[in-house]
Image (tube, rainbow, N blue to C red):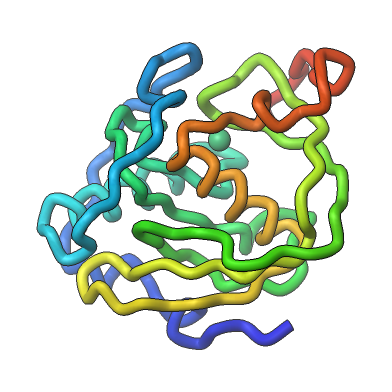
Length: 185
Ligand SMILES: [Zn+2]
């Protein structure tokens, strides 16, 4: 896998605004089930939202990604950072994408997922373990494409799903693939 250096070297300092903590909403909040709107990544409100998502992800133990609908804003913006997670192999560090989509995926793999918006459950979800994702960086609006695999690929698809109004529960094979959570991590 080759990492995209522009994405890998991106940090929230590029946004130029401090992030504020936002409250994370939980299912069944309707915003979690609604398809998010496209955004203008250069809009100052989107830049502020990007900074807030990163700040909120950072203070949340075990959190490897957070999407705008999870803080009650129905738009296509999310952040990801799997660098601290023990299951991580190669990754792009912290980044935020706007209007992102999965361009291609391969090698389906089943793995357990959790979500801050569904705190009481985890679930087994089958997803491609290698994906190409395209989106725009907040602030500059640059179009970027990145290749991700393994845990980062899963985190990206989970967050893109949030932006499309889907939770991991919608992707689980059925009630037999959903488990009560004992600890958050
Ligand atoms: Zn989630």
